[in-house]
Image (spheres, rainbow over the protein chains, first blue to last red):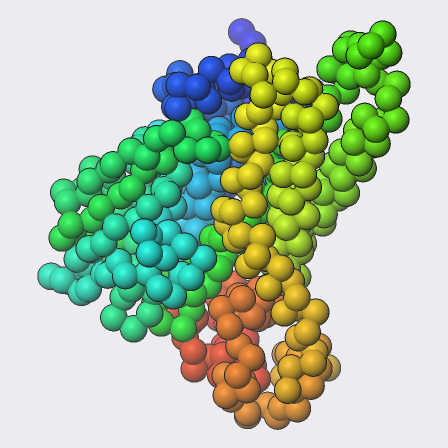
Length: 377
Length: 80
């Protein structure tokens, strides 16, 4: 009788999984506008939904550096799948960090195994970057909460089982755990987006959704903002990782294409302007990966500097991804605009990275504010 | 360095222009936002090897360096 050892969940493991299960089908899913259930099950089987959760909950207890590497690999294969991991990670991390023992026992094993998929509900039709403008309300009701409002652009909203919803509470913004099958929850799919087209976006309407007292995640009052700050920080880290993955995918696609393509009898690879584009991609993917790893190391040490390091990693990686995905299409010429090559998908997905989890403009404001901090009067 | 000194050093390292005493309300300085609040909690947890439970994440526990020192001392004594 042989005992099967659990695999080590690391970059090599994720890379193998992505090359086998994700990358070959990503364009098909992009055109279909959805990720098939079979793939969601395979991610669960591979233990990749929330491997940072501790083993007692069903996770693998991996560190944040490794989590970043895994999300990079998934992002290299398909940004839509990576975005599902991102929002699931955000909810799972918030539960682990701010949940009560009862909440963690109820939801932790479900999230670790992927039996329950999580999503993150913050943006609204009238509130994107301006989170203070959210109008969804949670009022005390029969010892619990009554939730009303509409959330928009919810990644995996069409499929998720559990939503982490941010709403205006009696004195501050609060976070609530809301099952998608709770009475009063209405899911309206959002299709035909520019990028991450198979991330199963939805608008979620909450109409007199009655929740128990155990729906509240984390503290209210002064510290409630930390739930949102911490959760967005993890989301930003994952998006930064996914952006590194997009740049690497551009390097892989462009080096392969240029090595085989000839123009006017000259190999594309020999053209200096093509070499310039490719060298910039290679340089930036390494720089972005280092920034991401530094943010991850600071997270693993519990160092407060990780928050700014993550902002910077996401800003650098997402803007570089958008720039290089554009050049990847350029290198491919008309082929790059066709469905026969993946670089068109990289281009559309990369644009999304500059908008989600803190737009490029918000990132610049935040990073500049850090530079000015010591000059505050 | 005392606990209070270490907390004050963290705050003044982040805001070098801040001249605060251990009893001064840091929220009255006008610098504090949710990002710094998160950084402050992370610093205290790492620096003093403690976990601050949800019910202690109250504004009064973070209003002054003295209040934060009392929070740290209380949590440390609870685990001894």
